Picture 1 (cartoon, rainbow, N blue to C red):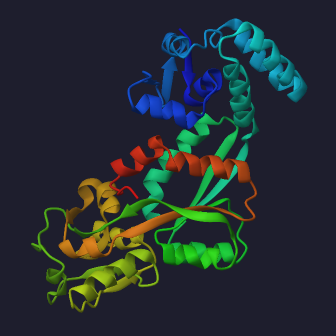
Picture 2: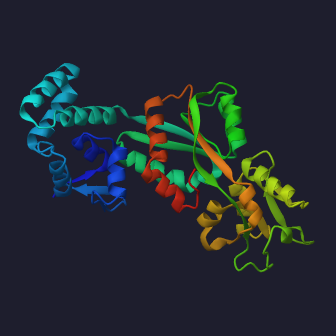
Picture 3: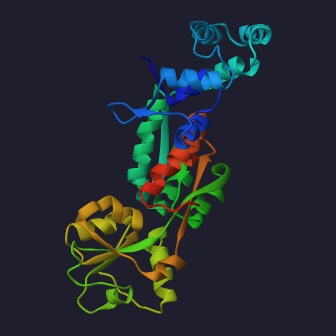
Length: 332
């Protein structure tokens, strides 16, 4: 039995990959997982869906031959085949849409370089693998770190295709310099949480508890979104906290607790989730007043602009949002 990846199924149906994902997520198109965890659609399921859409020629040998012909012969042959389809098919838009989708997919190749906030590491790494599977011939490379440092690298001329920041303020460093292509879009939000040692031996139950004498607390540097949000929560509570260290990104702050070099750290919920049983999370109400929006944008001088657009589309798709919300991010 033939099975088809999301991108191939989209090409055959003459619709976008995002539309196929929405059909799968909504239970309208049954999908399975292969040995690598990649979503695949059985041929019979795809054929049945195509038939229901009135696209009876989609899964035929002729359709596959048509797609190959379109790739080789170019736009002129595409126009002739589209005209021919008008006289022999009830849905002339399916053939032309299929070839256009396949052609668009074929264009994607090479490396996509993504600069992203450290808190996105696990989620974006997973989405990068999915992107590579759906677009053979592409490779996604990441540079994770503090959003302010990444923004400075971009404005300093570092080559990159996409920037995903942990706050609008750090995104503005890039947009104000004219280094973004288009307007940044918020794709998720993130909320703070206190990370303690497993079992919470110091019985930390509130933000105020972090000010106790003798307690070793770590914060992100105030220049990075995690640190700025933590400071906003402390100011709102009129609390003064002197940490044992300020770290350059949220992962570094969390690592201090994981290594038992600190008793607690103020980090994101997503990072506590990713750490598993290495730490324990403690919610605090003040975090609701310091939620960070995460914007994403294609960069102006992106070396691989088409692939950059496709990666951003994946992040914003239902499939991408599912990966992110499962990691603990909030919807925009």
